Length: 337
Image (cartoon, rainbow, N blue to C red; front, side, top):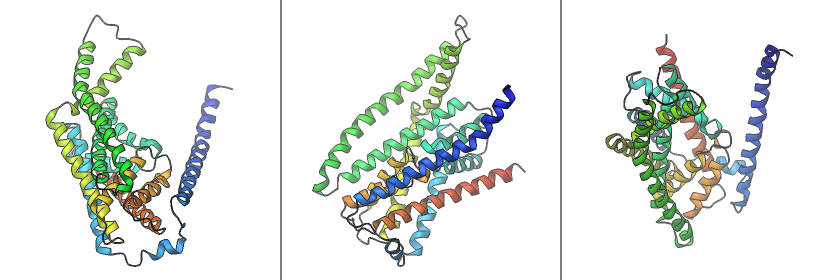
């Protein structure tokens, strides 16, 4: 068999592997979803889940929609700030490519849809490795703020959930210590690797040197965390993003639970987003509902029909982000004409 036939067979087998992988992830999502039966005392029927939506306030839903759109705009601007405003595109293009990439990431495993941004950057002559460093910096900022919100929310939990609160504090302390150390030394490591790259006596060939170059460019992307002004601005924008999302969750859930405290919404927000970091199932179906119901149960909202509320919140957020991503793609397509 010649090389051409082998390549054609590999290409033809790729769609089959993708379908099998998608089916396996769907099965995993279904198994997790039915695992909710272990959380709920009485698993609700589909009719019960739908009936609770009859009294929904459309004004609240519209408010949540506007907040989510503002959050996506802020996310795109934050990405531009962390990259220190490179001149390869306009701010609107950065926001648009971020929105399109985000839509990819929420439907792909391990959020690898973020690679869309890196490929776009490489097409514009920007280092993909450096872009990956900026992407990791975003994750660090998101994780730090979400841990902070988790600690704040768990500090007001009922005494029956004291263990939950006590477990959040050491995790936050350890992470923030590592975060501070990494932020401080990332810039120094990048500078050191850059100086070594200018050493004319070194061997500039082989896989070791290529790895050296990749790590240097990756750390140069993380240098945004060691640049105090960029770091502070990125952190403030990240805090604003998640506070707005907490307000959106509260506004949505308030339509069903009149006395719901905002810290309950913040707890649900942090748990569902921690579950979304890996995104093991398609669109995070299953883990989202499981963590959302668990968060509401910590504040005493454990009625069986909470599944319908959390599932509706999931569908609404997913639809909003996908709509934003689709509009961003239209904007990018129109700009190429």
